[in-house]
Length: 313
Length: 255
Figure 1 (cartoon, each protein chain N blue to C red):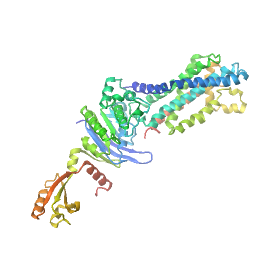
Figure 2: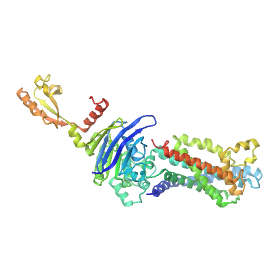
Figure 3: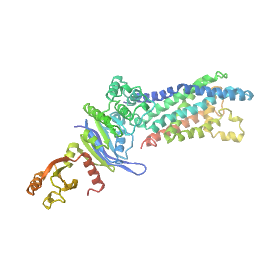
């Protein structure tokens, strides 16, 4: 698959000396949904700001569809739409006017049919003559997405798209993102909501302290780093883990009524059958059992923790 | 795309629409202000003033009055035009659009200059209700007005880029520009000042701007028209240099 965005050796040091990005290299494939995860101040917004021309990089290069984002800024920026994190709007402007204004800024001729369809897709058509200040927070967020899509970009940056929106709207936005991807739009989103990345992304990048510490296919990441947990509900409670079960490194929960075993689901030998056999040999009965997979959030927290502690965690 | 004309046109239309939303206020304010000036300076005081270099006092103050309003409107419109997107944060749209610094500048300054010229024309129309005034060099008057409007709006644009609060947005026009304009011979000839203060007045750049504009009306001014043209050109170059430095470095615009 072709790369539509190629970030090479990108660095940013702000005037105060804070180093927001450090030698970031990232390739985004055409048509994919890429989720950039990271804690506050990790450098996510700086990275997006540089790609969109809002922040000046200290070093490195960004190629957008093969165009250098500084030397060939017209071609590069024409391909990008940005929905910033904050709700930044002209309070007195009407929805349809401000969306047409955004299209005009990108040098596109008026296209009332496209704008009508866009506003309908975002459930904004009925509000097209409303002033921005009359819209609810969720509607403003939709209007900002409409503005970002008004010039039919190839790449859409969504910086915390669902921050502060209700569950229903979040679901609507996820659906909208999927529809955009079906139309061939490449989507790069930053988020704090791990379930958002888990729901939508094809690939995940984790950034912390200005460094991109991991880029991986979401499924592969979850399989590679994902741990599974087997929980056995015991018929009789235990006061301590029997010595015979020490090789499995199990632990007790629920006041001794649960025996918990963490295992690597990708390992050749998970240790589950042997554990069950051992328990049977010991006459330990259990009433029920279930397994659970670690979420992307668990993985993310683990990675960031590991990075902060120099990989010794 | 060699130049993003549609992008420029979008900003220009947006800024003019802002003017349109307050059209009656924008229109009535200079008309009422001009009428008040003529009631005070033209009728009440002007009737006791002798002609200045053969020009009746009422007519003499017309160029200064136009300049005074164009200074204030041009600077405030241009500074407000760029400050507002900075303040609301919507500047991100302009910075992420395929627009060069020159295009942004032409759109914003062009819109502000259009408003300043319109207001100047409204005042010029209004004064005819109070005084007979003829223009000795009409083409030069229009050219000077356009050049001055662009220069003033560039200056206002710089203030808008520099300002980080509404207070800062007001401080330069109110505390520096307005006094300099009043002391720049808007309502008198600097020849009427004592020699020392006349010499001091010559350090006020606004004297040259008003004098040049007055020359286009009456064929005479406090300084030569060439000196006025040089002053306007220097002011223009200074403003352009400052603006391009801002765009090159991103000072208070980009992080």
